[in-house]
Image (cartoon, rainbow, N blue to C red; front, side, top):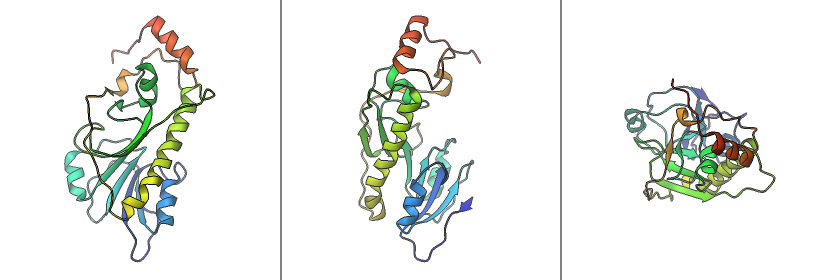
Length: 204
């Protein structure tokens, strides 16, 4: 646990899970809005005393007991238009499955990206966004822009959440095909190749 800043009478005391200040602008935005921020990238047990927890680029699954133990809202920033593409590699699957691309802020519950939605938007790409790396960068920028739009309501406790509608889709790390060429691949060339070869998976 790293204490990023300590101020008297902060607007909010926030635990930020995942990306650090070199990987996201959101921590600095929270500090600029008079929030006290602690950061954690590794696995964590619940700690009381926070006004909210924000997960962005966090690589660990929070147990329900941990979520309950925080005793405050726990938000996740997910680069898909939920309920589509819950779980791993949403940027790949939105193209492969031809499902909507977007970004979502939602509350974390005991499922995988199944919690109530706080704010979301569709993302459309330019013709020049022709690789998975480029579209990922667009999604991350859109995610952070969406959070900045959400921030005033977070600070003023005026946000609301609504249950996800529809079954959507979910994918796991193991679902990414073993014959995937990589994130620098040209998207539509890669999709055509995978369709022709069929998706292959390691049996590990």
